[in-house]
Image (cartoon, rainbow, N blue to C red; front, side, top):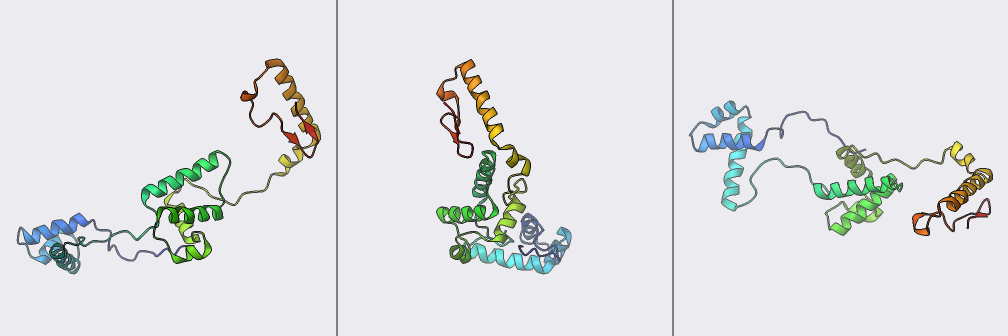
Length: 199
């Protein structure tokens, strides 16, 4: 399970534009730091730290201060493509198990040249934490271990039912005279268990 830390403060939840407005109040309107912090509802120490970092960033031409998201392996667009691929695979009855998704994520990250943990190289697959976080971010996905064939389905596949199916198929083929290009995965197939072939 990924480590999910319960938030104890609201630090980082304040939008960066609030800090920017408070900074402009201090620099342009000449309001004191504590008064600006109080009027915007933020901590005066945090505002002081923001003002210092912003001044330093403008001198050295670096990224302005503020809180940013933790580093992810894939970008939003890449995760969207991965999600679409997994859904497409499920639509064509080729559902991926959790382990297959993790292996595919590793191959995709190495193909895209993404930065990922070193453990992925050792195991040649993404970690369980990554998969859990990925499923939380994409809650429309449901990736499970494949289930065995149900008992009713396995008992229905017997010689009598297969013979009846192929007899019906031959009747339909004789009646409607379908061309070979209109039939998918049937012509020329043979049931090995029942030793029945068609046409």
